[in-house]
Structure formats: C-alpha cells, structure tokens
Image (cartoon, rainbow, N blue to C red; front, side, top):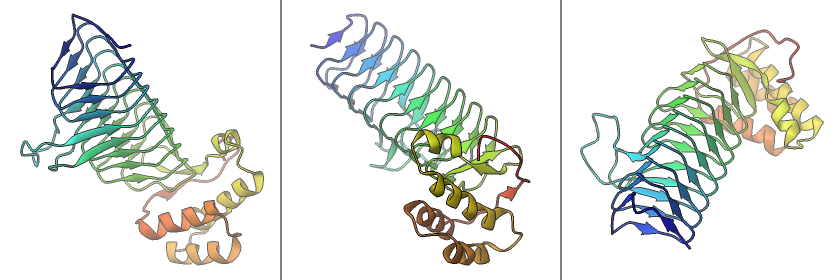
Length: 266
C-alpha cells in the first residue's frame, strides 16, 4: 500500500506504483512514472519526463528530469529513465535529453551522492558510485561498476569504461579505458583498479593481464597502434583483454601516463 502525504503535490496524471512513499512537500509533475517500492523524500522534485523504476530512494531537494541546461534544447518532450534499486542523495540534479523523444539514462543499483549533476543525454551504467559533487556534462557515458570520487568533473562526450576509478577532483577531458585508475590534473593513467577487481573476485592472472595491457599502452613509449599489436600478441585472450582492445580501437586515447609506483590501486 502506498503512503502519499497530503502535503505533497502529486499531479493527477502521474502514474504511481504500489508501496510507494511520497513525503511531505515533494513535487510530482505530470508525465511522470514511479515504480513500486520507491521512496521520494521531502522537497524532492520529480518533473515531467521522469521514468523511475522500482525500489529507488530519492532524497531531499533532488531534482529528477530537470530541463536541459543547453541552448540547443527547444522545449521538446524528452525523458530521464532510471532503473531499479538506486540511491539518489540530496540536491542531485539529473537533466533530461535535449532531443525530442531522447533520454538520459541511469541504470540500476547505483549510488549517486549529494550535489552531483548529470547532464542531458548521458548514460550511467549499473552498480556505479558517483561521489559528492561529481559533475557530468552532456552526452557522457559511464560504464557499469565505475567509481567517480568526489569533485570529479567529466567533460561533454567523454566515455568512461567499465570498472574504472576516477580519483577525487580529476577533470576528465578524454576517454577513460576500462579497469583503469586515473588521477591528477592534468588527468593521467595511475594503474589498474585492482582493489575493486579483487573485491569482485576477478582472478589474479586476469588482473595481471590487464596490467600488462596497460603497460603496453601507457609505459612503453610506443604508438597506440603498436601497443594494440603487442597486446594481441602478448596477452592471453580473455573478455577483459578484448574489452580493452575494443575500447581503444573505438576511441581516441590522449591521456598521458605517470610513472608506476607502489600502490594498492594496481
């Protein structure tokens, strides 16, 4: 049974699932769908175009499906589509698409911390963690299982691969390949995300092969073309190796390397 506060504004055309909690002073616009078991906290605003899945929790002063902050948007109807089991903390803003019928996407089982901003037409995967005050521009793709530490900034049209870790305060102005740790400003390769990969029970030999791939890319001083040839010749075939190859072949990597040093991050 849903619990809908009499002090909340809920548009009569909004579609509300079962066992939904909407607290006082929340705002639920028209053209909104909220799935079963979701909890909307006080003063959260769920605006037109929001499609929210099951068992999400959206905290105080979050704004879901805000109109795009982009001069190219001409008032067309568009969406924010959110999966299941997400925690969206205080003052998060998620903009809907600038394109008619387009969508900004948030996957499932992610944790989006306070004051994070996700721009129009971006796509966030599953099981991601976005730290406090992370800023994601428009048309960004964040792969599943990635972590962006507090204060990270991701520029427009960048792609962060799966299982990547972006250190706090980094300015991401290029593509970040999967399984990598990126740090410093200007941003640079810092190693393999071995701590999280170990937590996910990835075998040690797979993590070693990932590190070998990135030694070819970032630490041999050769071209990306030659690095890819060496990876194909030198590293045993695996889904992780192939994911790295496909990502690099599909993107223009222009991130500088830093010397390797002892760290738990690779």
